[in-house]
Amino acid sequence: MRYRSSALLLALLSCPAATLVAAAEAVAEPFQAPPAQPGELNAEVVFNVLAGEVAAHRHQLDQAFAYTRKAASQTGDARLAERSARLALFNKDQQALQEVVGFWVERDPNSLEARRFALSVALEMGSEGEVERQLNELITLAQAKGEDGFILVARALSKSKEPQRSIDLMQGLVQRQPEGREAWYALALLAAEHKDFSRAEQALQELLQRAPVWDKAISLKVQVLLGQGQKAQALQLLREAVSAAAEDLELRHALARLLVQMEQYQEAYDQYQQLLQRQPDNLTLRYPLGVLAMELKKFDQAEQHFRQIKDSRGRRDEASYYLGRIAEQREDLATAVDWYRRVLGSEFQLQAQIRAADLLARLGELEQARAALAAAREQWPEQAVAIYVTEIAVLKEHEFSAEQIWQLFEQALREHPEHIDLLYARALFAAAQGQVRQLEQDLTQVLRQNPKHADALNALGYTLADLTERHQEALGYIRQALELKPNSPAVLDSMGWVQYRLGNLDQALDYLRRAAEKVTDPEINAHLGEVLWVKGERQQALRAWGQVLGEFSDHPVLRATLERLGVNAAEIEQIKAGDTGAEAQ
Image 1 (cartoon, rainbow, N blue to C red):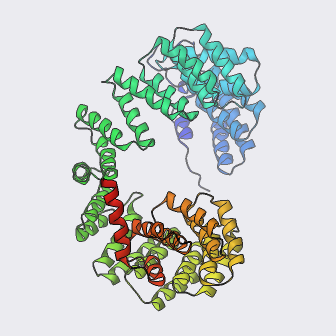
Image 2 (image 1 turned 180 degrees about the vertical axis):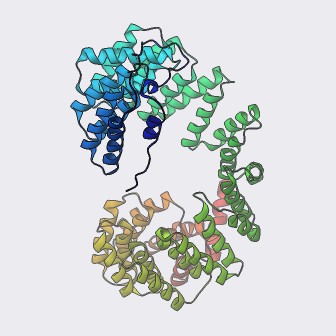
Image 3 (image 1 turned 30 degrees about the vertical axis):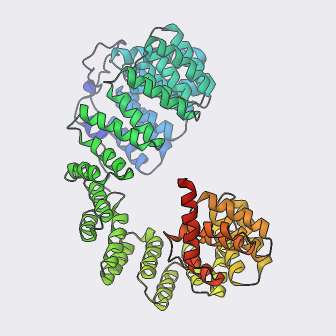
């Protein structure tokens, strides 16, 4: 039987036992390593190494550890000691781990990895004296190697199951070197990772007294403030820090990122522009600038940024996607499709393919559009339902027959039986077709799977209120939806409409006004105007309709409402003109 060769075994077999101990690094090492154990490689050592590897390959960890530990004892090889320690760790044998890590440190006392293992074992099993010794020796070794020992200690202590004990241990180390900024930083970082923000802030206060413009300290202070939900204070701190150290690019970058997080896009764009002025060849800055320019509708600037990076390997697909979005904004649909087709990877590939299909449909290439969506379902089967929903939307938008749309729903549900999203989408289409029975059947299936599907509860309740006389039943569904989404304009509108259908005009008006305050929507305003009209508040009704008539004059619910009540557009325009004149005076 053949076994995979391990690098460890090959290294072992290629040199005599006297040279197994790794050469010391070319730095001043604080701990004296023991001499290499004498002796030549022999058959027993080879057997133990090979047997250990085979046992590990078979997941027989007890045997793998026993063989490897024996080989480590025979040779004194630190690498075999490390291998033994990792096997003991995987095997969750704490006693064996403690023993073999001690041997590993003995054979390679200047190994940071060995020291980190030793500290972890001491924290888990050792006495306080052993923990203190390992902490001090790890810091000594790290500093000798030019690394930040306090950070290494903080990383080890961050894994402790006793957060307060670990913070206290770090506090003790810091008090022995109170002037060292690295020590205070490590303490603050450890406390923050353990969510002890009070002690983190205390450590940061000490740290910033010693290093008031250290970008790492300021950035950590910002993270501590954000961890406590104090976004405004974090932003103010970064603004002050950038003002005091205008050339510190790390701080300015941190400020730009926080501004994006807080959706202050114009100021974030300005900060990234200043970063680009200082680093004009830094293409990585072009991407956030392009995205922010898109958000701010600065399409010319966005195009410039994305064209700068469209040929770079790191952002080629993202740049192509956004260049497609820009072309789409300009109604240059053919160019947009071309850009979307260039997106060959990244998280934007599926979205690009869907957008390209939609644009092909708008260009009249409906068969190409549907073929592209079918190909997308093949490529991303986990997204097939979402792609089906998109294709259905394309068919509805381009006035395919109801029969064709029903057929597509049937195909989708054959492939994905009782899928909630498909059932919900079909229910809404059924409502638009006036097929209440189909809607009720589909939404009942949705609610059977998820009784707290607020949108399904709302859709079912609204349809029953609007198209049937089952108003009390409708009220029950809408009440459940409102409990789940108390601030939803759509649900507030449904509650207002069912109250109107029940004859409760004052309650209806209250809900509809609350919905209209949250969003400008032609259906909500159509309902609000109708209730006002029925109550005799006709000028207020005309104003409600006038708010949406210009932009949504073709909306079917708004148009049907005005026709049913015998209201013509001239009456609405007269009220709007009078209001405009009064405002001008």
